[in-house]
Amino acid sequence: MTVDAELDWRAPHPTDLLQTVGVLRRGPGDPTYRLAADGSVWRTTRMPAGPATMRLSQRGANEFRCEAWGPGAAEAVASAPDLLGARDETDAFEPRLPRIADAHRRNPGMRVARSGRVFEALVPAVLEQKVITLQAHDSWRMLLWRFGEDAPGPTPFRMRVAPAPDGWRRIPSWEWHRAGVDPKRSRTIVSLAPFAARIDEAAAMTPADAFSRLTHFTGVGAWTAAEVAQRALGDADAVSVGDYHLANFVGHALEGRDMTDDEMLVALEPWAGQRYRAIRLLGYSGSRGKPRRGPRMEFVDHRAR
Image (cartoon, rainbow, N blue to C red; front, side, top):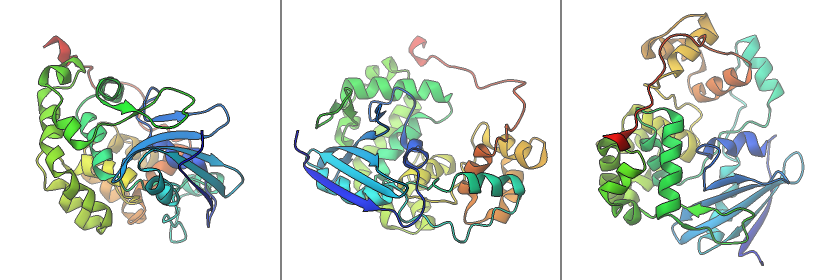
């Protein structure tokens, strides 16, 4: 099938396709993101002009090709450089610790992606509030197969495009329940949908103003805003304060002890402006964080209630 739009792009710095865009995947069964056998990434999105399917391929160390299909194809390929970290600069980043410096040296292509699709990133972030990640991914997958639309283009797998804001708003309460989403999270998504255009305006704001815009809405706190900023806004400083595991991961990686969120923020202060990057590099450094003992977040089956 002939592509609707295409772009060849050379990154101005080392860039690794999977390390950069892989954070956009919501679990191994995400209907909006698939990795093909040839190493290309297939991703669906909803642009202002309509749905689009993107095929992102790495052709060389810094050479990329983006092909797209659907009404939003032209906008999708225009967004590909940002998606691949074109705006993400690491020149000012100071690793400070040997393990972070080593991870930074071994992973020069890890960039912070910027999709620019704020509401699109907000919905799965809300689904991940206060539940284990696998449970949220199950809900995301079930809702997209039931209420999304088929991806345009010659996808090598069956894929789906997430519903438009009105589509999320029209999902009946029993279907949220069937997908394992409790009333609080479903009400949040439904209440946010009419304001999707205002939410998407955050893509053109400073990080501080974008945070204020997102957290203005009921049900969107600091953790959710950070999760969105990391993916939609390319914010290399966004820290997911309130995460069930993050403070203890950082605490054990840096100081060998549990930490509160406030203590974590103090410990990350040397990397101010680049804290999200430092956290990701800690993960690549082999730091295992807190030993796997003690209670874990409980799986709550809302369908049984």
